[in-house]
Image (tube, rainbow, N blue to C red; front, side, top):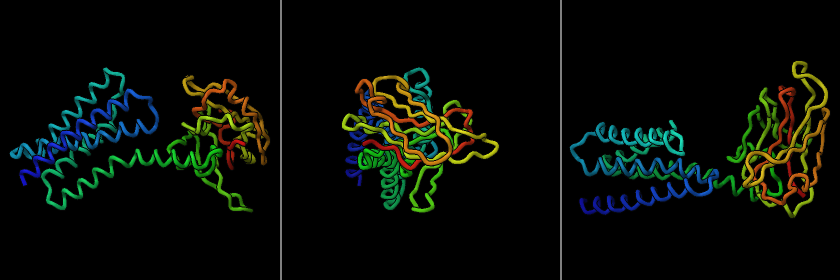
Length: 288
């Protein structure tokens, strides 16, 4: 058993070194959703290895002492980030604590506990990166469709307004229903879209402007399709237009969105604060 523990500890040391290298590599490399998910998920196994080392090699130390040391290390590291390019995070601290608990569980638990603790550790570590990776696969599979009802569950999708899934009565087709919030640019966004749109000529947006409730005002609603380009801060191209209530298919020449033939980084469909409370149903945004 001691020999097995020694081997496990040696393997854990190698694993810890690999995790540190991977963590630093993902930080200095180009940042995207996947690298950020990896950075966050690595907190758990790193502190699991630390607490395992303490609990397995320092037999006389109680679980409370081991956890206190691990928590102290976590607090020091998170506090130090205030003075660096990275920001301290309560979520990261929570991941550090979870990793410490799992490491102690594996080191001091029964045989079944060790297996269960290791399984939980693996699951917690890979869950967020796998979710992002699945979103990438769905994005690539759906292209040239850029946004539809299925986008609501993607890690690439976000909104500052009230979003729900609704259906067309005659066909049962699902759509995104978005009710604009009272913010500067109420809208929906897809980040890290497939970047190369050069093979297509037209951007299409199929949608319905719902009739206005009395409190939300009446008349046409202004929509803006905006895109950002890789390497260019913020959003670089905006195409606005007003639409009355009813069904619409908005067509925009791809060149109007990609004048410099740069790669596309994100797509935004937004309105303005004066239309807060108005609702739109988006069937899909796509290229052809």
